[in-house]
Length: 302
Image (tube, rainbow, N blue to C red; front, side, top):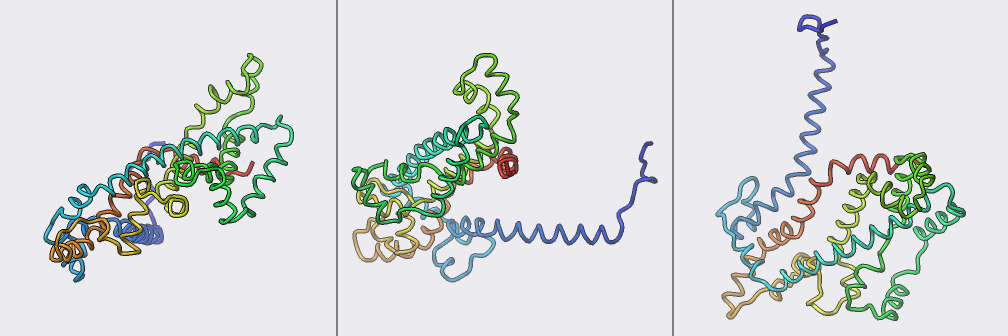
């Protein structure tokens, strides 16, 4: 039967009201989520006096790029940016490797003792050695003030192992793996040639989780790093936003210049926030098509 304009079911008044309420609520949520990001952008482009006086709401006022000029002229911020990229890429690579090699054996039903090992892993989620013993261990291993202190103490997440294990169990048919074993494939070849190519959604989720965690991390650097040349960007951002030590990040010859730069620091805060979060904002669109599928399948209880 061909549905024509005359025979098509017309939405009832209740359906129309429901749609209106839904669109209204979704638009409100969208505004609440996007407006802070938009405000950070326009505030970073506006005159500092206008921002301090509360004159910036929907459009930038007296557009200026002074805050971004300070960022690109400041060596500390650029070095911190490079350090953060290094810690994020290196740390995420280690996280992903450790998660995969832990999750795959736990997903195999023929792996003896997998339930016991899973219980041991879960136990560590609720009980740990604590901050001071962890610091003493890192110090004893000679990792203080090195890149290893930034990536090894949090090299693996038990929560992410469980998500990836569940994905391997539910999304990849065991028959495929058994067929590969009959054809002579080892477990390593099955993992590399079959499991991983079929696991793009969950790998994308893990990359996003770990990368965002490393990118936003500052506490490990605050504890384990003393050399400012090795500080990540988040520590400099912390100094600007929390401690107000903008003067340490600026070069000023006289008092008048210092006062002017102190005024510009208001827009510098917003510019650094946008500058610091730009890579994460650019990363998500490339992974979002895998994100929902990976989360949904990985969350199914296996």
